[in-house]
Structure formats: C-alpha cells, structure tokens
Length: 281
Image (cartoon, rainbow, N blue to C red; front, top):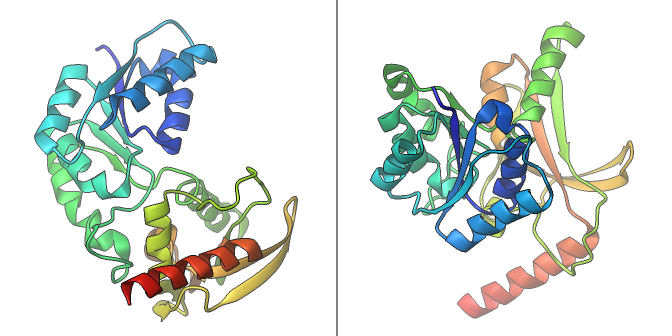
C-alpha cells in the first residue's frame, strides 16, 4: 500500500511538522499540507525544498481546506490516501478533524487539547469534555488517536511516565516548568497562538493538588527557579493540557504546571488588559 500523510495547518507548528516529516519521507511516503490559506501551505512546501529537507525524492503538495468542514476534510483524506492525519492547526479544529478521521479510518494525531471557542478553561479534566468521550467511536472504527503529541503536552508526558516506571518507587509531586531564555528581538509576542494563550490568562487556573482539582486565578501564584542552562526564571501557576491526562494516568498526588513570563511581558500584558477593559467599560 502506498504511504501518505496529511498535515492540517500552516502556522509555526505545522511548518516544523512538515520539515520533520519531509526528513523522514522514506518512511512516511507522500506528504500533503492543507489549510485555509493555500499560499501559506505552498510557502512551507517551498521552504522544505529550498532547505533540501526531503529525505528522498517524493511528493510534497499543498492544498486549500476549511478543516471545520468535516465532509471536505474526509474527502481530502480519501483523495490523498492519507493513513495518518496530523492536526497541527488551531485547537478549535480538533473534533472536526477527528470526525473526518473516524469517517475514513485514518489515524489521528494532535498537539494540543480541543477547545470550544465559546468556553474558556472548562471544568477538569479537560480531556473528559471532548476527546475521551470519543473512545468508543475510535475503537469501533479501528482508528488510533494520539492526543497531545508535542513537547508539552507530549514529551513531558513521556518523561513523567519513564520517571514513574523506571526511576522512582514513588512520586509525590510533579512540577512542569515551561520557560526559556531565548529572545527574538520583538517588543512583545505570546508564547504560542495568541488567542489560545490569552484564553489561558482569562479563565480559571486548574491544578492537581492533594488528589483533587484546585481552582485559582492566573498570575496569583508565582514561583522563581534557578534552572540549568536558562538560569533564574520567574513562573506562574497555570492550567495546562498534561495535568488533565497525567492526573488520570499516574498515581501522583500533586501535579502542577508553571509558565514563565518576564517582567517586561507582565508589564505589557497588564497595560494591554487595562486598555481592553477601558474600551469595553
């Protein structure tokens, strides 16, 4: 059977995914990239060829697609013969893309938890609100769905599992620290997709403490760390995807996620929120 993979999305994550898939196209086969804006997909294709990242000669093709249209996505999966679909677009697309995979039998991979545009920081555990409800559908269709296959969530989950299975006889707490010391020279930029990032700031902060979900406010709890490589970093207790899977899969009483923000970032963010409140009030 001819191998084929479909990447949905044309942002920063999809760009990296496309390059990595191209570097392994001897295993993955044909590579298709689809998003609302064809030009963005084509730019990724050109980037891969310009950098010589195709492991071997093969097909790398761009497509225009509204991934919220389940029938259109299913049709593209059939057209391309994709056995694997990597959902690297907005988290708002997850359930629509998963539905298309269930309809066609393609395996599904995403990098972040599904979000409903009308709801912010829903009741935990987040995966139980959407993804886990569809286990039976996936099983009946013979579809494998791999959730949160990025770094956090993703690699972080693997680290935690290895620690639990191979390194410790008992784990009392896990603290996940998401921070870096990089600079791209811009005055202000969010850590990832601005809409998703800001949604985390405006809702309830859920953390897993003493075997129960604990609610808090964003920027309420600060922790400073002296870390290898990146040095002194300020972080804030934040809700995040992997808390909602690790708390269910590992017997660990307390699991917390900390996200790093510089003083400049915090100052700018506070001014921005004040302006927004002023205009809406």
